[in-house]
Amino acid sequence: MNIVCLASLERTPDTSTPIALMPPHLRGGNNARRLMHLKSEMRYVIEQRLTESQRKCIVMHYWHNMRRKDIADALGISPPQVTKNIQNAENLIREHLEHFDLCYNRLERELLDADNTEMFGGTQC
Image 1 (cartoon, one colour):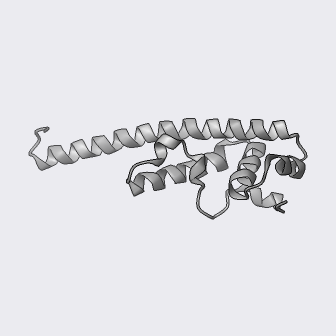
Image 2 (cartoon, one colour):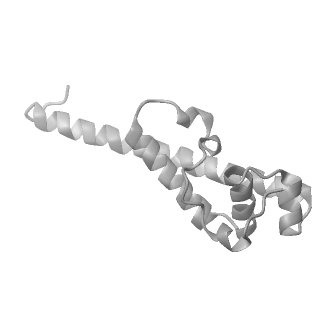
Image 3 (cartoon, helix red, strand yellow):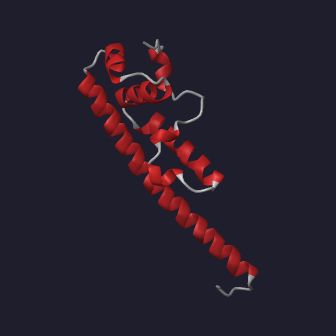
């Protein structure tokens, strides 16, 4: 069983963000800047939008590779509650990242359009 200091679970660890937490359709592509922004946004959601219990379960599961039963024992909750916390957290993270990605793509297109307009003398291609 992994030993985890519960106080350390208030924030996500400084190690890299587990890609497994990211919805599969957002993992692809070769845009390193987009992926960096998605990972940063994921950390924001985990640290600011999840409940304390959801955050602890996610960090213990994804960063510390703990089994759900071990998480339940460490937190003093039932294994089904751990599962529920992880599922609810994953859903919230997925929904937030999908919305963020839509906004990121829209902004990127608008910036590209603005660059093209400027480059070609005000006419859109």
